Amino acid sequence: MKKSICALFLVLLVSSCTPVTVVPPLTTPTRSSPAATPLPAVTAVPTVAVENLLAQQVGRDLSAFPRPVCDAGIHNEKDWASYGQLLAPALSKLFSDSRSQALSSQALVGIFKQGSGLSLDAAESISDAFLVTIVKANCNNRIGGGSSPAAPRDTVLVVNRHGGVWQIGQVANVLNAAWAADHWVALVTATDFGGGSNFEVWNVVQSSGHWKSESKLQFVQTASLPLPRMSADGAALTLYAPPAACNLPKNILDPNPWIESDYKLQGGQYQCVTSRLIPTPIPTRSP
Image (cartoon, rainbow, N blue to C red; front, side, top):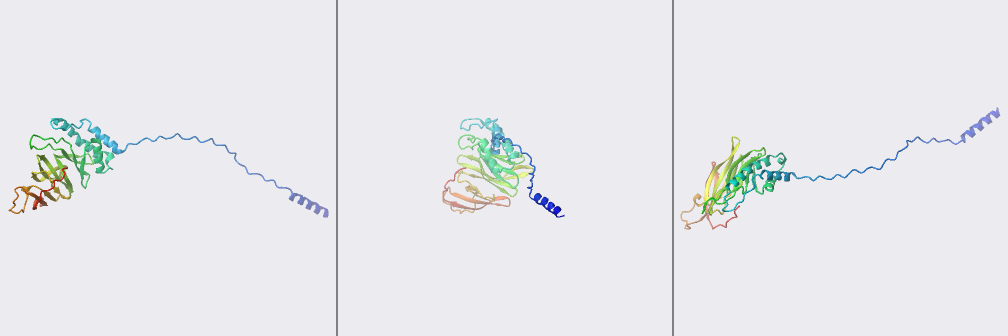
């Protein structure tokens, strides 16, 4: 019995001293990746700003009749008439173009000048309509000799963002324009003659879906300068036309006095409120 126990003890002792074989974990063999092939360089395509594209369009629209020469003694009235017929459609196309809808009116003014070489004055309304003056749209040569009036040089239109365009008139220049509730008030030099000028105050109103001008006041200054002035809202006017004066003293000694008069809009009409004698004014610069 003792021998059996000893033999069993010896077997256990030998087995405990035998090293254990550790089986390494199975691994998936890896493959070497080929070197990444670089992508070809992408050449940036230059983009043309939308302003330049619109200016190019204006230039193309006016290319059928290039701007004629404006020199004394050159009778090319028909060329100017043909050229003038292109201005309103080109302006309407610019303001209604889908690419111009996000642009401000001042941006469109710059684009039109870039494409045509002509300056614009644009007075906005509370809607999408604009009172636009195309400066120097016409040649302002004298119509006749002596003190005859000059041909009107500026074209006045109303345009909107939907392609609408209305011809309002042609004048020597637009001195000021302001939006008043539901219409524009514009102070214009209707004609220039010799050293004097005919002036008008317009209401540019909408009737049956169309825009048109109504003359609210006309006066003549025997001297073009100083220029009359209109308030920002169009309700007040200062002018230098002696026949239009009021409330002056009766014992004026100067045979040709300088008189400044203030007019205000009362009951839908401009009425003289006060006039005063002034020293000989320093002429202001003509627009």
